[in-house]
Image 1 (cartoon, one colour):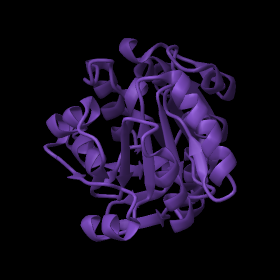
Image 2 (cartoon, rainbow, N blue to C red):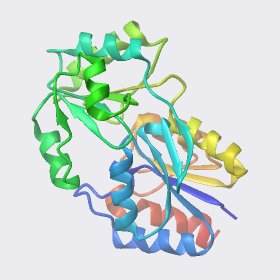
Image 3 (cartoon, one colour):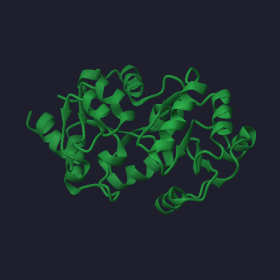
Image 4 (cartoon, rainbow, N blue to C red):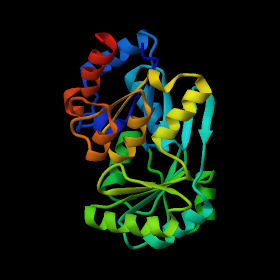
Amino acid sequence: MLSMLFSDIDGTLLHDDLTIGKDTILALTRASKMGVRIAIASGRYLRSLDMLEEKLGLPILKISINGAMIVDGPTVLRDERISRSAYEKTVEYIKGKAPSVIAFAPESYAIDADDHWFSLQTNMLSDEGIRMDLRDGAAVEKALGEWPCKILIKDSSPERTAKNKEALISLIGDDATIVSSGSRNIEILPPDTDKGKALRVISEKLSIPLSKMIAFGDWDNDAGMLSTAGIGCAMANGSEKAKKAAAFITRSNNEDGIAYALDKFLFNP
């Protein structure tokens, strides 16, 4: 019997139109009633996950910022921040090389661009963040009220993104975790931070065996989680790296792949 379920958000839990399928909601509700704990693992910050919890109508354990921040109700299980050195080198390098750079703290963010992502975030969360030059780390910390957990770099060009990612790995790779959740973004995170690490932290803190966990994801930054869980399920729309890390490839996010896999592994094993 499974004890815990982990799901990524974009490309996994959500349809492409950012809605949650009816079958997925019913399946997660049924799993929760059976005693399976639901956890959401995302690169998003905590405020996004709070709103998703309300939408689902279920209590969820929150793995935000790719595992830098893990919160179980009022209890903080993990809280890691990007190093000041990695922050300073990143924002200095990337200035003028990407149209949108965002520094995330658990509950807020600062952004140096007013672009499509900014408009979408504002509409979804009624959160305008703080628009400012990110190169002064002390000013960003003062504006956010705390030091950031990660830097997110967004671009419209996959080729430019790949080039910048390679350069940043050479520049700060020993002092940060550098991942992508799509072909047009780069995430700069604290060292030893990914969703697989998050599962291991939760397993230790809550005494839940990894073998009793099922995880769902669609992209490269989900691969660690998919290979760590007892049952890792990659979405049919997932990246090749995610699929190679998974034990099972389920239906796509738009076909309620979570519900399909739960029927196979939980409801009718």
